Length: 77
Image (cartoon, rainbow, N blue to C red):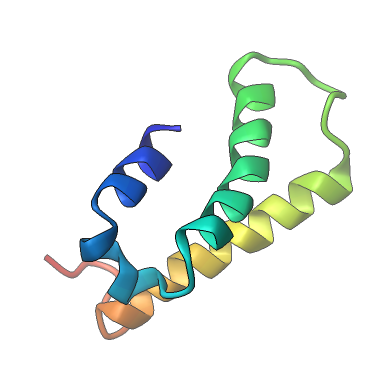
């Protein structure tokens, strides 16, 4: 996943946004990557609703951390 690669390669820039460790975020992004691949390759039925719900929650967590970092401004430059 390109986004995770960028975050990990530039961790010094992203650590203040995401906190925690690189290992933690690898574990968070792996299920996101798996669901993304299921959707991208149109493999319906491979992921169950519980997995999808968990990924949505993790994505919301990431979005909230980014918004919090930028002071709640969704459109920060």
